[in-house]
Amino acid sequence: MRCVDLRQGRFVETVARLESFARAAEVLRVPPDVLDRQVRALERELGLPLLDRSHRAVRLTTHGRRFLDEVLPALDEVEAAGDAVRRAARAEGAVVAVGVGTLVDPTGVARALAVLRAEEPGVSVTLTTGTVEELVAALLSGDLDVVVGGVDPDDVPAGMAAQAVHADELVLVTGPATAARVTTLGDAADEPFVTVLGSAELARHLELACAAHGVEAVVAFEVASVTAARRLVAADLGVAVLPRSVVAGPGPEVCLRPLEPAPPLPPLCVLTATSPPPSAPACRLADLVVDAG
Image (cartoon, rainbow, N blue to C red; front, side):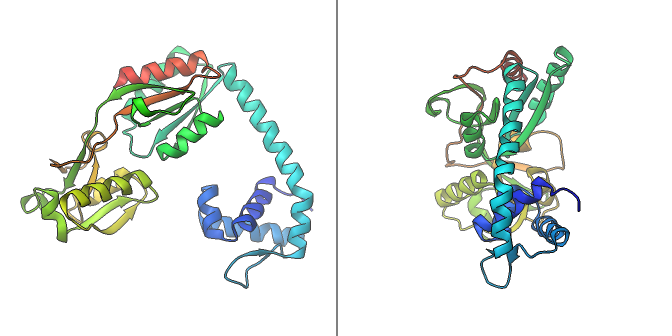
């Protein structure tokens, strides 16, 4: 028998703790079918059922409970060792961990990374995407060095510093043909809306904008990225409410209409921790993102 894949052990632990493959897949950021296949592969390897799937909530079997009792200490030790190595590398400036919000145009970040790579070829960069709330929590816990996202610079948590990059605003985004009949958000009451799957920020922006205009949005399309949302809107399949910065650049043709009144949108900022202070490469990258604007 081969050695147990520790990642599979973490998969079993997460499914059992949440009692759901769907919720575990969301937390682990893997497709539910991949998660299920990996757990079943482990069960076949062991020749034992670890999870009871016969009820609405997934439960550990007796074998599964015994398996986790044996495996969890090893999982925790390996993950703690990996965290220690990563933190040491980042403290030395060999690695910079960057978090980018889902509603951020990556162009400026990409330019900054290109400059940093030319200046510091020995520095590695890891990129994570997520909501601003998730990324700020990761920055505070020490898992990230730099965060780029929409934040009020006067309202950042203690232990963080913010540099404003540029102001932003919400706009109504329509396709070329749709623009002839939809010039305000009020005109879009009967239009299908496009949004980004799992983006709590965008859902909140859309809700506030529609409430200000007395519109109840009917979301017809939930897609994986702002880029995919723009493609659908450009094809006149729906309308969207998005930050101007993420749709103002090159891409399929869309029409942007300002929202009046418009819910306030926090400016794009670069966040770093203040204690412990970031490494020199992390500071340099933060400055480069600000300069890229």
